Length: 234
Image (spheres, helix red, strand yellow):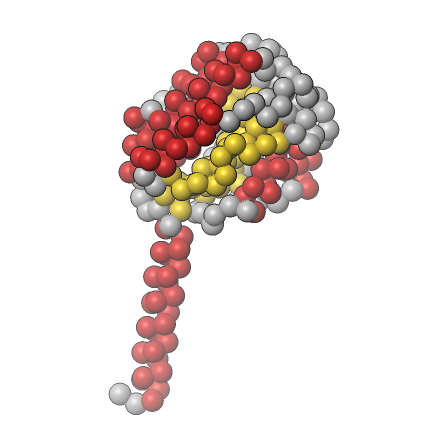
């Protein structure tokens, strides 16, 4: 083989190695899932407890656990924060790789154990969305990025979701909603038409906080990649 042939072979080998390396890096994390929980003043102590227990129980449910651990290629990375007023956002679970049963159990335990961060502030959903983009900037490099926002009312403080989507870096981020009924009759429409954003975004609906775990399980199953039968919005 002459010099030109050797050079071409070397280029092909390097290209193959780069492709394999890039594929491996992308496969390390298939989904960055960021969960945002409403703790505004409309959520009382009992409802807050149902929300926390509902999320922790949904993460540890057998179907969700199997979907997290059996998907391929790559793992699911999870982070959780609470939100209410303009400057009231608190991380409960920092970015964590859910790559073992123990990691899932530890994340569920953190959600249950953390004290409530806020209780007397309004619903600044635009600020909550903006905070989500800062979390993604600090998070892992995953094939998909999903922000999962739960709440029981429409925004009543600060800017609206449309302004968050216009001014914050939401390229490549899907925003799904879990609208909780019982407090505000407009909440489902608001989540469907104002909050929902990005590729394949959808909204799930809970009939009050007593229904939160069921709705969250359905939502997580779809976000992680499972099959969903029936939902509140496409």
